[in-house]
Image (cartoon, rainbow, N blue to C red; front, side, top):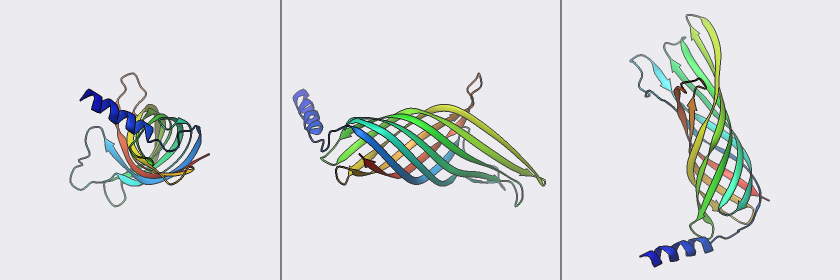
Length: 192
């Protein structure tokens, strides 16, 4: 059994199509879902629209087919609690991230990806209550992690399907959890 496992790993590692280093840039779009730490249930009469379109861009350096470093920017869109037709509270969240991306080639052009890093986020809120509009904002730094698949079209272009979790907690002494954004997206990558 041990020989089979070692042989299988060697075969997977030898199937890397384009083992090289260089810069990567990319753009993505998908769906972000805001999950509150205490749960997403709301009382009757209140609606919680917690899904929106997410957009992201990234730049990185690919050390080889197994390891890359990436800087990214993401806009998670808007999440909104509506208490009545005129009373609401909505948030818009942005994130800048730094992550280590690990790849394990499955076939010549298909790679399993794992991601771990940190992100700095800013959440801008706006509430309207009894005709009065108030604005606030929160920010913090928290972990980001995820997994996905990358399919290479040729030596310079690839597409990724990824699922990432961006944690959110307040930067005070007790690190109060706010929740997280679960993001499923498709990304187009250019390697040079």
